[in-house]
Image: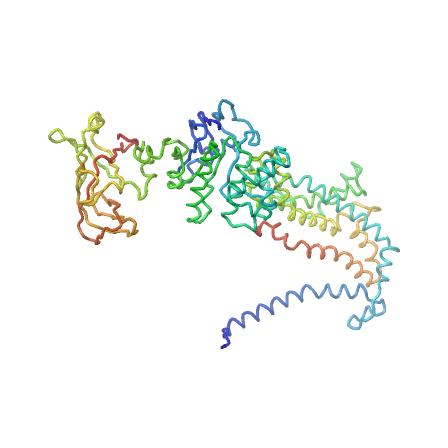
Length: 366
Length: 273
């Protein structure tokens, strides 16, 4: 188990700043997910850690060893590639044994470890096959077995599940997470899938445009997003963003826009009263934190009405799109709820769960 | 069970396709059949080709031994082998660079490779001979091989770059992660995967050199390759010798195409996988 430390890491491609000044410290044995939309630089960051990409500036440390300019083979890492990269001209057995053979392990040791890794991934019956004879899921397992067979210091995974079908993806998600917990290897996992990130990561690093937006546990990232990007990227359906201004009436502060007035709880007062500008803010609230009358989980709510424009009946949930003066308000309710389109509906905002962002910077105020 | 009816228009389309394919095949095969028959025909039957029933290999014997074609074949093999070797030693690294790296002037360089084919050999041959005479490689195997390498090299560069491009970089990078250097990864992973296609293009280089006649004729006098030799000997002989010579020239190329036709598709940049 090693600690991975990235210090001021930069990687520019000509004028594109793929990775822009990233500082990150990953604890020994931790499972960290790099999450972000495609093109945000997460894969480039991973490749900088692996050594496949030479950094423009900054340093990479494993514990206290400077790895920045070491070639990949000298870093004692392993990697699972998005399209597996299982060598087609070698059998499963040779594929898994390859890292050990290169490192000149004894024949006995190689055999022992290959069988151990293959059993762990449930592919011990496929050892003498060629990759072309395997399904996508099996190839994926070979890639993972190859990656863990020599017990690397750091395990890197580049969207390893994105080429699998939906069902298999869910199963592999659990398996990889369990495997990592058992092996206790420091892992960096790249994905654009927030569900993967939320379920697998001990901590999640959300990236956008080469910049680290937020690094924290899934709980922190879900409940306390630092800006509109993180707030909007995490959660499905997406958080509602409503432009509001702050008004004060009878010593109570309100967030107001056309057709909506939300009173602020006392706990937010301090942060808001400090603000000089009273306009140009964005109210954020997740669809699951807006309730239907009679189903609120708290009494600290504020109601508003709107016409049902469309209801997505997912059966497990119902996602309602309400027509409001400021646009659509998306509300997630339990699936048993019957709603008719074009009908007026009263919904309740959970006042504890609202967020406020600065419109210009996108930064969270609370 | 009732027989399923195929619409008449589909049947017609199928027929037309078959007929067109048939015509193309006949177009290409007829000369080959004629050459083959003529090559083995008795001299007295030769001018009535439809009546040929007796065959002989006398012309072959005469060509090989009296006209010393066997020496020329040996020279040809040496030249073609050298051409193959030289063009790969230079062309493979170049192809690798073109396929794996992005650098300024890359597309221009690719274009330049093709541009070398723009100049007619007739224009280049005489200056080439003079230069070769000055550096002392005229009328040697090396001289011809060098000239042939220059002809083949652009194609080997482009072909090998296209073959290497069809092999995912991930295979190589995976090898680098799991303990190999870039060069080791190239030899142990990429080259292994590229081998069928590269072998095909190697034979391609061989065949081009084997068939090349103009440069070989101009640059040599005593060390003539087979085509140059045939040009100066068999072409001055009776007609049936010419066909025998043509047969000897054509067969290696045909055998080559037969064996590597599957890999040829990969060579031209369309990956089969």
